[in-house]
Image (cartoon, rainbow, N blue to C red; front, side):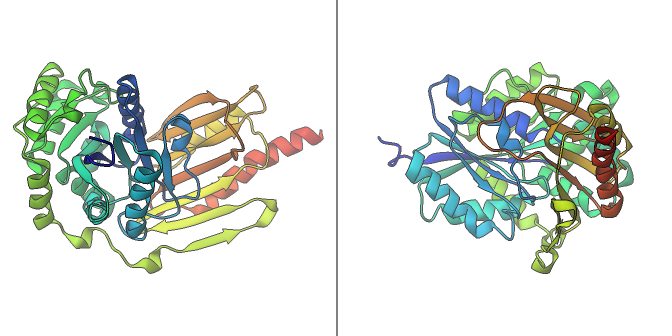
Length: 369
């Protein structure tokens, strides 16, 4: 049987911003390439630039869906991207990493539309849950962001409770109980940096998947119950889906451009989520930049980008989530912009852009002395 004759498995990676989707994606790609199989990736970003794509090797076919959300404004494009990947690259498996602001049920609709034109098999909806963030937001129990997180959990066929190393034992139990109350069917696996010893369940049918994940979860001291089939779980949650959780008023997807100071700032509003994309004019101080990340208000919960520092010899890919930051030295292949993308809810665009401007002005003034 050729690749074109068989059903190509598709796995949807869901989870709120900063939960660990890209970390999981890298592990999944390593698993398949180690077997000599060919994975492909569709990455969706609200902003103009796919920064997470820098972490995916050139040998992996990748489609980028930028400046929109595949769960609404770009849903029709998803089927086109799936078809193009299959026709041009004949992958053995496709992973779709949606933006953290996406409602997975609407994304699933896009995948099912693609099934009308290509032989594909939706195997799983893997939702990565940031354990500490789940508990923190559940304390308040309000807000559209929290409702979106709950919807992502309800739609999952597999739940990875991530960052459990930051939870006390009683907090781990509380988080597991919350997940089980929200989703009675999906296996729950407790992870640190999305590490799982056994990935064979990815290639199994629904029943084998449940058994394999049960063993994995037991070794991680996670509470698991039997899994329903992917199709059954999706159908069940579709009946419960509340369309009011995700407003598809496309007037909200507007853009504002500011070309002052010979660089661009791009403001994109996606429902309750704001995205600011800032293109650096020049290298900045690593110390000053890290200090800015620590000063970010709580409603800016995710940032990532590529930056060149005045006090370091190379460029860095940085990731920031909930007051924690990480820097990775990179040597980009081809032209890659120095850029920073900030994601949050109802934060002050003016304050953030002013802070970024001050970073650059600091370096300009020091260079002039």
